Length: 208
Image (cartoon, rainbow, N blue to C red; front, side, top):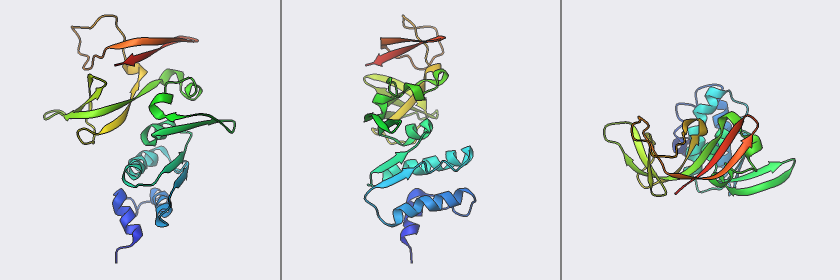
């Protein structure tokens, strides 16, 4: 007879991971949270004890879990990559006090989160909608406001809203629209803020 545990394993698609160690121990431990059919899941750094390859392996399953089950998840983490992959709303705490409660995309480029971001690895979180999967190339087009952006292929359905992260190192600025260039994506934006940060200047843009 199929058990509730088997249903959870099938939901997450982790059948092939269970026989493997040490990742299987962490997967089994995480699945135990669901066996009691809770109204709220509290995940306090569930991947902290795993090495980087295992974290990368398990993150997609936690991402699928957050999308498929109708249970609120309070996910505690110091890892920004995990937050980007899993969070919709963020509570930022410092010295035991709540600094902000807001949407991930709104807080990512704010001064509240800035102390936790590496100066040489700044990025932006954007809410986009999937428009098209290219027939010939492994690419997906999304819209930001009324502008089109082509990305490496995303495993999402057409019309689905998703969050993407764009690293500042992958962005170039110009005052005039370039015409002779191999750059695939050219978006129109407006400079909203310029921040002097020791040896560099950070520029905040608004698109749309």
